[in-house]
Length: 301
Image (cartoon, rainbow, N blue to C red; front, top):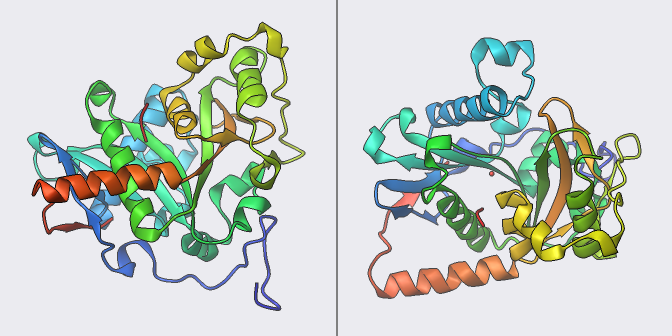
């Protein structure tokens, strides 16, 4: 940190905004597709607006989140991080070539983007200082959603493939973010929260902790009363996918009343992600499946 630079509680110095996202040039992320579906990064303000519209429909109209008045008027989910992150999109070209084609999205915030915003999004819920101090590039994931009509199709696997390509390109060593369980009553979530704590707690060097004023103890059931295999199968697909890549959770859950969820902080070292993408890239290159086009623009079980 530069001397004299103010910093927030997460330890990220506040610096003048830098041109990221759409102004940062086109990162060489290989277009990946399946039939009429394609994953790419947002290439225009219209793309981002369509992603925010999809997020609003899923989070607020389907999952019961409570929008701020200005969000309700615009029917968009948005915050300042949208201006400096990369937005990963899945499009169904069978629905046309415009923004109506966007059927899945994920928000990707690299360290450089967090510097421009003053902090990572997760810092509002967790002490992530150990992750901020991690050497090398880190990536925060968030705002994942898929059009309900496409949840039985390849949209989530394509989002995971896009993240793997992004991780491979930027040499990301660590990914993290808040993942959600539905509902805001931790006693109703006693078994999954306890399972995550007793079986997937992060090692101390990577362990985040919920902020004191938001901390909810995850140890709500004894380890002996938990069937690990059954609980893993009952977890939301997104959390299950992180765990299958060797992910961990931090200490403490957080109630998010706005989104009607109980959050846990997930941390994933990207070795396995990068290896899988590297093997896929080499295989598809040999088979002549990878085109020369580049895409501009926050995984599955």
